Length: 100
Image 1 (cartoon, rainbow, N blue to C red):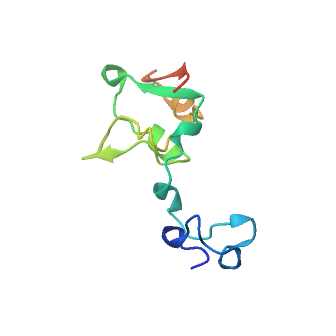
Image 2 (cartoon, rainbow, N blue to C red):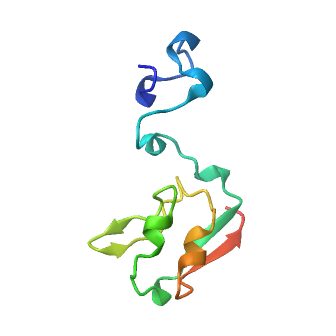
């Protein structure tokens, strides 16, 4: 229970939570829409993209989905706008814009 994110809610007693609300299970971020934290937003320019997929492994939030060996548009529910994908793209297929 202590680290099962799906069972933690606003009425969970503090005795059942970990210190500092640390999470030890993997893949817990998919349960939270954290994209609203973003102050910059990546914009995918599909016509410039060569499908090299260099952007996907560097995304710390796994917010660049790949389907049938091709990258899709961003998962803005989870993208925090760090800009790492735009820096690594050699074709300029990702541009950062201010705001959400």
